[in-house]
Amino acid sequence: MNKDELKVETTTLWNFPTQNYGDKPHGDNKYRGVTPAFIIWNLLQRYTKRGDLVVDPMCGSGTTIDVAKELDRKVIGYDIVPYREDIIQNDSRSIPLEDNSVDFVFVDSPYSDNIKYSNHPACIGKISCEKEDFFDELEKVVKEIYRILKAGKVMTWLIGDHWRKKSGFIPVGFKLYQRLTKYFDTVDLVCVTRRHQSSNTPFWHERARKYNFYLRGFKHLFIMRKPKKI
Ligand SMILES: C[S@@+](CC[C@H](N)C(=O)[O-])C[C@H]1O[C@@H](n2cnc3c(N)ncnc32)[C@H](O)[C@@H]1O
Image (cartoon, rainbow, N blue to C red):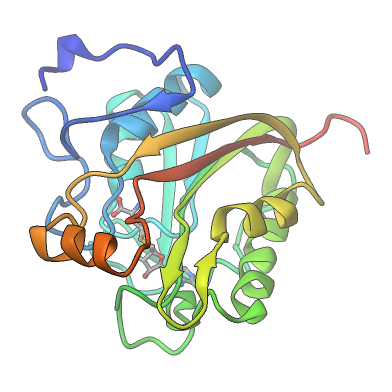
């Protein structure tokens, strides 16, 4: 997609054909679990202005850093295992920033233990979403984001649900959303079409019919605001 074709989304259904836009990479589209750069572009257009400080506490291959820089936002990207030199090593359950100091936060966290990001023992992607621990650990990240974000500012979180043969459907998005609403007000909920996932093969489509389950077709994008007054 050409950079000039980029438009701010007007509905709550987002469907992007490719991970990247323009002729420069944003993050690394070979990184497993990379975020479509359009999502971050859209969010920064709506909820930030030039010079604002944007933080991504789990920034993977650095998509948020690349998009934010291009739009003249200040940006800090952390990850438990930095993929590039401009990413700071940090566990997102304790973020080394002052209270009320950040203008916008984007998170695309692990959704369960389905992707091996690293061998780091503190990687939350080692915990299955079948366990309540997974949500307890994510809530620690939610709390930290609440602490560093300025009052009245927005944070957004991208996450997908799961279906497991043993446990059936796990509403990962709604379970996280419950935790988010303990701290934040809801601005809106967006559905992002899932594309290019590893289960998008004839083999998996056939299994979905045979064993009567659905392949995940979308991810949740929660847009939340830190209340002005508590
Ligand atoms: C879905 S990926 C992020 C993808 C990223 N937005 C991109 O576009 O490349 C989730 C990331 O969370 C990181 N992560 C997992 N546990 C973490 C923790 N405790 N603290 C910080 N990062 C963590 C993983 O290393 C992984 O890079």
